[in-house]
Image (cartoon, rainbow, N blue to C red; front, side):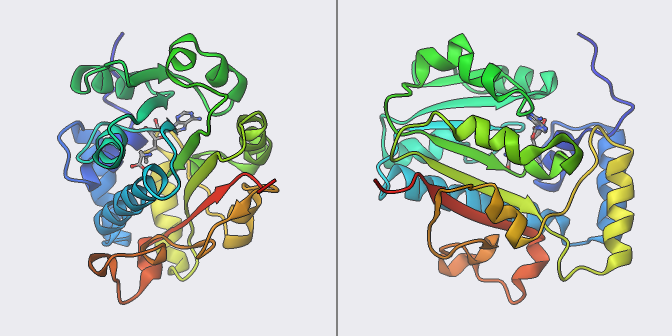
Length: 263
Ligand SMILES: C[S@@+](CC[C@H](N)C(=O)[O-])C[C@H]1O[C@@H](n2cnc3c(N)ncnc32)[C@H](O)[C@@H]1O
């Protein structure tokens, strides 16, 4: 399979923001162009990883979840979900799902697929295929609570594709005690010109980007209970002292964690 190194790739741009090495000149040029309008983009990507880490620690610990399905997992980085979850509960099992063959190739090369980790090709646009995947089903027992992670992925799907129904189909059959983690790009508080310039770079990449506000992000949880503190800027979601930010809106991401309604 050939690698397209001429079109900026959303996973590799994000990798560049995080200081990773799995990116090409075209990705770096796009990332630098975004940073001209949004200089805080790397800090925002780091804040997103910090949010993901806090959410996974909460799920594997207090919430007692042992199974994770990370859709839009991205290129391996520091503190991958299975490492964080196993730091809390050594029995944690993680299925990484992504639709980008490059991401899957890197994930398979860099992360040992053991009895508790699988790397699965899947597209959020086709949730039934993800849920039916054989490797995923060997790892994840759908009779037990599952945490679905949709972290920095939903803003790559426009309303014309109906992401709300996709997420509902993904959650529909999950048992009681299951959880959903979302982080989502939001241009609220951002200078309109800067937002448009950044969006125009993404339009030339492998995926354009779509901002959604807190109410729209809450809609993804359907009838599930959104846990405290609700849909907030990611640095405000159960922060440790290290996560404090003078202006949390510069993260440009909203985040929330929800769970199945208590019966
Ligand atoms: C910005 S990265 C986020 C990585 C990681 N979740 C994080 O937050 O650190 C977005 C990832 O979502 C993947 N992605 C985008 N659209 C997708 C889709 N429809 N189905 C599966 N993966 C998708 C991309 O390939 C990329 O790896």
